[in-house]
Image 1 (cartoon, rainbow, N blue to C red):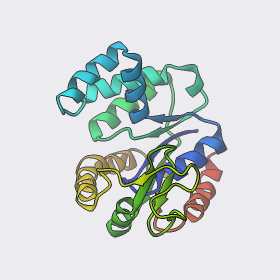
Image 2: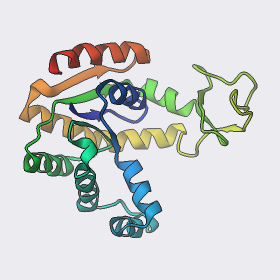
Image 3: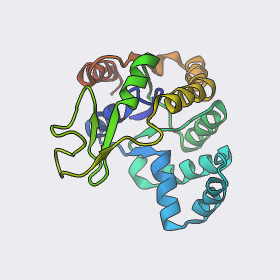
Image 4: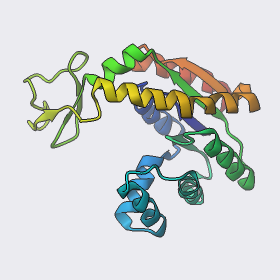
Length: 218
């Protein structure tokens, strides 16, 4: 199963990614994770990316494309993969389709999780993270038992600097301008592989919709 998981920040992609990876036994390919791995290991492509990042610039498409291409060359993706965070724009989508064509592969599904902006802002702005173990909480939906202290390890729970309302609104603007057109681009190529899922419900409700739809595509 070759899947692209799409949706704005805070739409619940992370929870569904976990379900998809476990269900279909496919690797979760996150461009963010790949960048961090290359930077940590000081690879050639990592050095190139680092040069842009340190200048506060976006990593160019051709660098991101190359990182994804190298990842798709690894043997664990032969039976499928879940792409998360890529493609971020139409140019990257075109590059991805070329990579797949070179390998004789086809996309099986593009899962587009849709949520109302108000719900997304509430989810992200209310998110809190443990500094020590990384456990995630929410001030309304999943608060800590003791204020500002992690239930698991007792570490300090805090709000990330980019989890505030204004930053979230800016991230949404970028998503709608740059990334949302990717869905229409892929839909125009083959509408049968695109599923729009309303992500305003619970994790289980969204998972159930995805599972029912993908059942026919096994």
